[in-house]
Structure formats: C-alpha cells, structure tokens
Image (cartoon, rainbow, N blue to C red; front, side):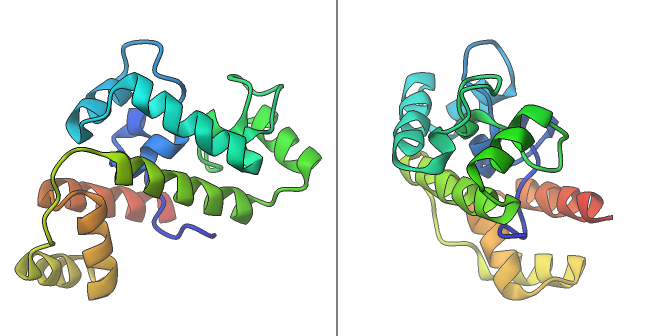
Length: 163
C-alpha cells in the first residue's frame, strides 16, 4: 500500500490523519470533535478538501455518495461506488492512498493546534513497546500532534487492521 500506516476512520477512533477519509461535516459525528481538536472549522475543512478535489483525481466520482472521491473512505471499507469510480478513471488503490495521504498532510498543515517536536523518550518507549522502528514511532507521534495516548491507540489500531 502507498500509505503503510494509514489511520482508521475518525468514526472508528482514528487519529486526525483520518480526516482524509471523512464525509462532509454536515451532521453531528466524531469528525466535528476532531476538527475542534485540531483547530479547523467545518467550513475550513470543507474548503481544503474541495480545493484538493479540484486539483487532483480525487475530484472525480460524480456517482459516489458525496459526488467525488475526496469524500470517500479507506479502501479497507467495502464500497462499490468508490471502487467503480477508481476502476472507471484508472486510479489504482495505491494511487488513491497516495492522494489521500497528501490530502491528510494538507489538512494537518492547516491545523491551528500548536505542535511540538516529539519527545525522544516517548519515541523510544513506543519503539520498544510495539517493536517498531524509531522512525515509525516518531512519525506516528508527530501525526498525533505529540499525543502519546493517541499514538498508542493509533499503533494498536494499525496492528489490529494488519491482522
């Protein structure tokens, strides 16, 4: 896969990177809490995703639930509409995930929550506890805005999804 540590969906407890797989913020759901945590309004989130859709192939998919792939979920969740669109436009799952990762990075770059450098002790603890590389531990911790509790949860969920 093009995004080895892709997060779970926000509605399944995923970390903020999972916003790349979320529906539009039109109803009360966990996405609203995550947006609040990272300091983005629903409108800002919507605008970021729409802009990304206009610039990439994720703008395709008029027959998907919300009219483009930018709002579609992770490939691990079955969806015939998403899969049909990917097939029709010739976009592989790896390419889809690569674009979703870029979208996630764009969303997090716009986040207003202050971030600090990951704590070296936390990186070492995550690496030793979960038998992952220090680089992977540092990446997960950074992706989780240096929230060790969320990093542990993310790693555990990734392990479960990998089984």
